[in-house]
Image 1 (cartoon, rainbow, N blue to C red):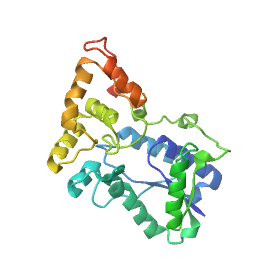
Image 2 (cartoon, rainbow, N blue to C red):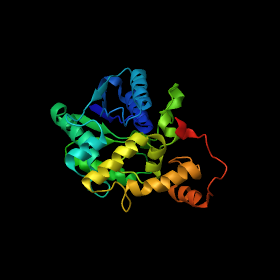
Image 3 (cartoon, one colour):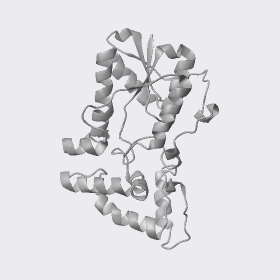
Image 4 (cartoon, one colour):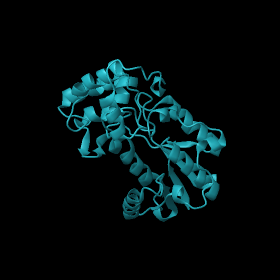
Length: 264
């Protein structure tokens, strides 16, 4: 049996890689990654992926799009942000399509392959759905973060620091995630104005918005007030309802909350 770890560069996928190698041996494991442009995938995520792979003594195997390297490139080519609500078109082009192309080219003996995912016990619906999808394609799946005999709970246990982006964001996704909401895009406004401005321009160009009910141009005035007058620190670690309540209750020119983690 060969084990293919969906190695995203996030903390959970790193733990999956370690658990899989410790149980089944590195000779039976592939770390499969989709290399995204450093414009939107922070360099510290790339550092993290390489350090974990080096610890395991494994190379990173890349399954990349032949056409695209960043989400907004996909949007311009396809003239759309989503296939349908919750299904970003960039995910398909940058990850899903290359993933299935890799399996088709390298894993024809499907009964000999198990795909390893980073869902935990709180994500039963996602586990059930992914199991059904991959079973229909002929592959087994497993979820090491649900195992009872876990050997590692945090990457710092082996002396590796998780990506610095976790100080602000919950996940190691692209900066300017097309599936994210207003709180995420406020962080983009604060930290990566170049990506914010590019996305704002593309919204106008293709006639669709990333966030339902509001364009980035409309939100820019709100964000400007939050940043320059209310000094709201960007974070995804505050629950959305609490975050926006704090924004509403913060008076202009209130004592500054800066510096904060968004300074990275």
